[in-house]
Image (cartoon, rainbow, N blue to C red; front, side, top):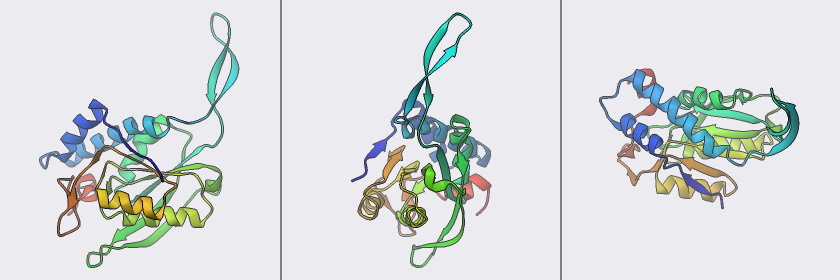
Length: 209
């Protein structure tokens, strides 16, 4: 079963509290989301493989470390996942970016796919799926299923918030996928929103309703 890592760093938790505040502006919400995604990316990429190289410092020859193995592809789930891309890409600038478009049917709460565009070499990369909220887990599971259908074998999920039922669904449908979150909230309300949550992350990022 995939591991669930709660990134409880004080800076992440402080910024998350600011994002939760309903009075936080769209500008600040976007900036905070980008900052948190970048901070969480340190944990998501903690086990990237390294190899030794020889370099010349201004003082002497030295053996140093450099990344080796698979490179990274970021896959935001449209549209809210777009708000996380820049934060992670600042940390890993060589990462390529694919996109998967999903929306939640308001009646069934199921995920409906409407767009997908991935780098040609995505199957040779470690993919990190980005979405601020895992409410029902439907969007995450649908996106991961699509990535697997095209041949991706190394997949991780990065979200700010999730609820236990969504985590259970992810573990049930994709037990090989690790999940990284900033917090686990207790439940959903009657409209399928995480409680206490952030509200509609996409609306708060882009200033829509």
